[in-house]
Amino acid sequence: MSDDDCEALIVGAGFSGLYLLHRLREAGIDARLIDAAEEPGGIWYWNCYPGARVDSQVPLYELSLPELWRDWTWSERYPGWRELRAYFRHACDRLELWPHMAMGRRMTGAAWDEGQRKWRITTGSGETIAARYLLPCLGFAAKAHVPKIAGLESFAGEWHHIGHWPQQGLSMAGRKVAIIGTGASGVQVAQEAAAEAAQLTLLQRTPILALPMRQEALSEEQQEREKADYPALFAARPLTRGGFDVNGVEISALDVDEAERRRLFERQWQAGGLRFWYANFADLLTDERANRHAYDFWRDKTRARITDPALHEILAPSEPPHPFGTKRPSLEQHYYEIFSQDNVSLVDLKRAPIERIVPEGILTAQGLVECDLIVFATGFDAGSGGLTQVEIRGRDDRSLADVWRGGVAAYLGAAVHGFPNLAYLYGPLSPSGFSNGPTAAEIQGDWLRDFLVKLRDGGLTRFEANAEAEREWTASVAAIGAMTLFPRAKSWYMGDNIPGKPRQLINYPSVVGYTNYLDEVAADGYRGFALA
Ligand code: N01
Image 1: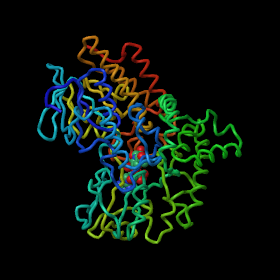
Image 2: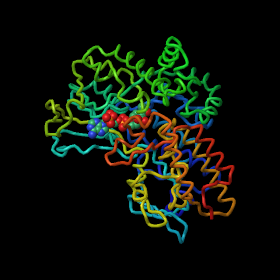
Image 3: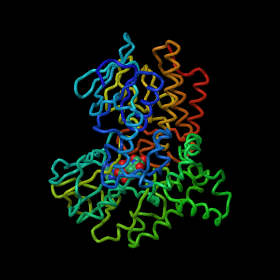
């Protein structure tokens, strides 16, 4: 990529960034892309910890472009990070994106130049790129969260956050490993560590309500047969609530008898993956009594796999720690079985909180957890973190971090008043965390391409979200969220996982609702934006 000015600078080479690059270049817009990573893949570059694999099944978890899927085959239904990275290289090859990409370049700051109507973006290597449009596609988990625990600097062993795992890999064989955090990442790395480590200790604050993945090996022949159905499958994605293939059944869990309820639960449970979450009864996430039925089903199924009864109450409590599915479920392959191994133990941090880290390990209220490797599976400053960790200064020279200090506000979960010609994808107040990633990438990417083409064709060079439109959108996300059970959990969906972060639902909870709204805005002449 040359250092010349460009029309649109995309930051981030995950699904959103690459798809947008492809669509903009196809439309004749001079778009370029930078990314701090050495290879494309976004989250699949940084999160290369043992066991990292996607929890949405392929082909739903890939782009719908026939030139990509026609000659691509996966080895597993839920592929791991290595295979996903290879897929991203394949996408860059097939779509001929490489000449327009510069890897290993981190955006370190950006400032709007009103006189020139351009963004000036600085990178870690000291260069400045000028671009008419700045389009951050940073993913929802671009900023790792390492909680402040006293004494970490005194630790004699090694520690890593799963989002900054060493690219050269790291053996856990024969080591004493402690994992803090039992979200999706903690579960995945624990399954691998249990097989290798001399001693594995999991430090759990809240139990994860994990679902069986039911991994499946895929043959080339099977996928060739399935490819006949791909177009219909991809067309269905934006019309569902979660960007998957189907919605749940359109009836209440309370309108059927116990036997029928169990039949549906059992069907989705056996189908595996996240289906028990996204393809369940219509009121799973809106009615507490309906939700409780699902929780009880999950608890009983899970307890049946935990051999030590003393762990039942810690891993699968009688009473739900939060309504089922309001904190993101994860997929597991043999998570509950590892606790019957002699080399695995569990610390319930609710009973024995961490006091400090000492050179030999982690000191809890119940004693020392000896270890030589600490894995922080403690999550991310989700949604806004990736955008606010970089100094992005808008028209009044205020930074986005400053503007969002009291909470995120953005029109369509993409554009911010005071920040002209900036549109971020897969970020806060869009469906991102509630959407299958590639689905959101395509919905937002297509819409933004159309918008920028419309500006170009109309001889326009500036857009800015109106303050009123931004207020309305932000309020509507909160209002829709209030109709669900999501605010009932302390989760990253609500910003609760980061000390001091304002509490708000950070994602728009319906992909199809979002798709329809974007279409309306476009049909209405891109209402809510000031165009110049
Ligand atoms: O992070 P998380 P994650 N002391 O925030 C605990 C996606 N993802 O990286 O629940 C002790 O979910 C925290 O405890 P609590 C997926 O969308 C997808 O696992 O706050 N513990 C929790 O247990 C997922 O939801 C895939 O009480 C502390 C854990 O750390 C999202 O990424 C794979 C703590 C954090 O869980 C994030 O998942 C991986 C502290 N001070 C991730 N602070 C797949 O596609 C936090 N915790 C498969």
